[in-house]
Length: 149
Image (spheres, rainbow, N blue to C red):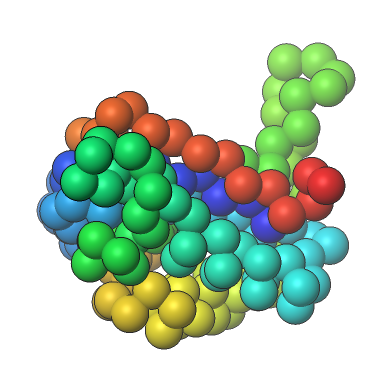
């Protein structure tokens, strides 16, 4: 499982030019399910995304989580995070889970993250051609790969 977390002052996802989800201050998460992901990966990713201390406290030190700051969350599925570029110039996506597995896993991740963070997780549309706009705050961008030990 791979996630790219970006601390944002605002973010929005659109489909065919129409906004479908947006947030203010919080996290934009680009999220990918891989073929070999298990329950432990899901649990770890939910815990990390809800608890990672990347928001500033009163002294400006990154010491607070998204739930500590009552931040919003927008999660967008992105299978291209599983790309392998080891050979040639065309990325291979064989590590990405098939849609029939990834779509329900994405929905489950968003539901579990909502419970853990205590906020509604806004979403993109799985499998759609989406346009994502954001204002990265900091900038703070963190990559989490549950298979990187």
